[in-house]
Image 1 (cartoon, one colour):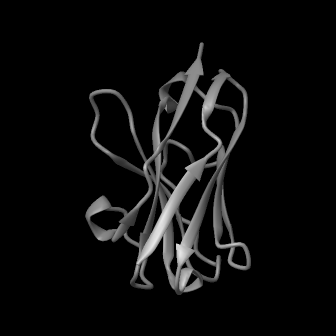
Image 2: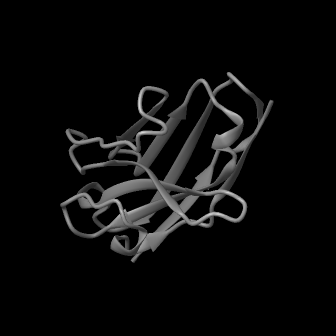
Length: 124
């Protein structure tokens, strides 16, 4: 079992930055693929970024590429999402997710554990 707790969301003006954190508890965190998803009002949950257990693979959605950076600290059982140059369309609830297999997938159905989400609101 893995428990995930996100933090770091909030209200920010367009062009600003936020860093989300996801603290994991449970065994074998360092072997899990970790990912960030988001769900805006009236929208489906969408892939944002993921990171392999070693950190050598970090795919991003086209909408955030070049602005967001995913990273992890396996010693702290924590994964991060640094979000820069935020836009109003980034407004959403952001979720951290863990996958027990080593290959990265971009569908939410491929992830086994989820956090409760943290709200990010970007004002124009």
